[in-house]
Length: 374
Ligand SMILES: [Zn+2]
Image (cartoon, rainbow, N blue to C red):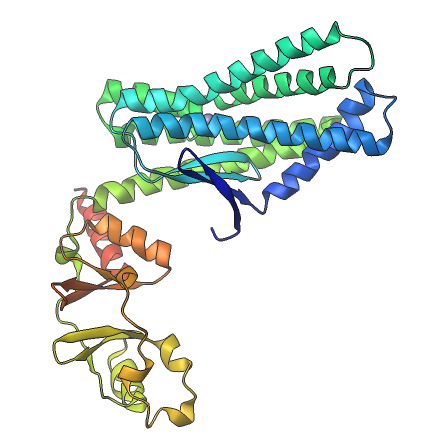
């Protein structure tokens, strides 16, 4: 996810806006201006209505941010890592890098979001009522009224019992406590999530054809997103459980083919890359590991220079991102590969090359464990 704009930090949590968010911002503001404010503030000029609609939309996303912040803060207090909050097309998401440690923690982290939205709804609705009593022509009463309704809807929608919605997490917490198994609880809660997604698609299409217009399509679209999210969060849990507690040293390839630092690139290409059918080789100078030489690094050197350019010249400098210690969890190795977008890591112990671990190695382990059911 590199399509996000970082806007700052609150309580040490980084806040990002995905580019898809601008679409929803525009749609909400346009809807507000042409519908809600056209009805409640008919005397306003078009420009003023757009301005107040944009301001209201900003306050709405500030509410969404508060909802996510409440999840993140309770998660941090329960010992979890939060890598940030992203606002995107479907609202907001707190990026938790691990699962809650207990059913009780899961429940608290999940429920605080809808509770926050409910509180905001109450505050906005009470303010709207107070403002209504004020002199006529007050533009803020309809602003607060809409924000009150929409925060209430946000709370209710998020309480629907389909994982990974908040209500689905509450359901998972209950199942986890009852069944004593996080993976079973996740499997059931994610099935509920997919069922809910299907119902939303059917409901959305029905609404669309009975004249609800874009609102119906939007509901179907959210349903589709929920199905995807439920599937991928369950798959991720299965993967995490299979790979946690397995040190990299048991998965890595120990017999590593490596290239001596002074080998010319044309020899690297013909003998190593084509001859042994690997896309990347570690480059060694005696005992010292210089780095990992990939096809891409060779491609950067013009072909006519391959004869007198050595592996030492072409290999990128070795950085910590591409090395890993043999006792590291295989799950962490996979996270690193995904984050760095590279398919293999050098396994180093005290600066010495112990082996190389690739995505293929990890997938092989996964397959074995799934086939054996262990
Ligand atoms: Zn939530």
